[in-house]
Length: 234
Image (tube, rainbow, N blue to C red; front, side, top):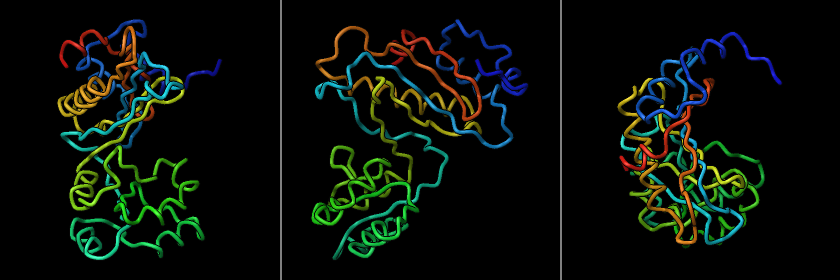
């Protein structure tokens, strides 16, 4: 077993590893215990009672965080015609078509965080699937990144729209802000994600849906949250 550093040992002081805290208590402890000197990201992890191997139990969606993520999001838009100007006016960092596709494919350029495409550009974007897909950058109509409403899509991503998807272990990981946000804003963001996950519950899912919940900072320990209390508040 790996030995804990002095910093991590100190961060764990005052945290009962066996206890499940309320969402507010857990986030308060996470913020207070954050050991790093930089403004750490706070993450929410939810273990769902689903089988991700089954297509009808694959949980995926988006959530608009009321207080944003605290991170500057670089948005790339694949568009042509009038949609180019619309994307630029909406604040997209990069806008183009074949030129951007060639740069990504030929040079391995990936200096952006999110990608949006208009439907008429998917013939071009589709060729980038092997590059963008594994990195979670591929535009997808299910999460609103393949759309003709480019300005809305750009604005939402810039304002803190996050995407989530259950992994092979049945867990969803979502960043919910920065330590500097304070507990109240982090609770609002976390609750928004939990409400979204509740709405995204597959009909095929049986038994307990939210089996376990935890919050943590980039360098801090995980703190368990009581799912019963969360569901009551949702």
